[in-house]
Length: 162
Image (tube, rainbow, N blue to C red; front, side):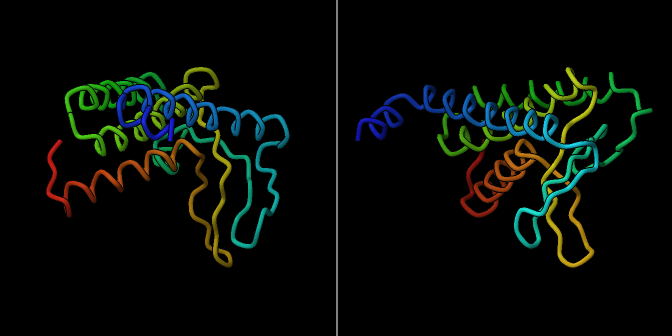
């Protein structure tokens, strides 16, 4: 009851706590993978899911994944997106949009932290069926995907505007 009242009365506190918790979970998961796994090492968690340590120098799901690309341009592009979504977060009054944007921003910042401090993004969630693998991803990528999906549902099916 207490938490429900807190989150209803002050959505900003809830969003900040959500941001901190999710960012912490993302960074801790990547730290664990980098400490316990060698590059390309893999362990089966359950059928159709491995933890496999890979690195990503590019964008989402390995797009433009090359260490020779100018990381400054990639970082600038990502920073611009983060700033724009922060602007949208402060502009909108819709609580569901704020949660969706918080998910997207948290994921983007989680991967941006990797890019700045490691020079690449740590990916490790490997989903597959038979020999067909989805590109490896991490928790931050999941936050971005979930936030974007929910944002599109709001816009397309609930006719909400940002």
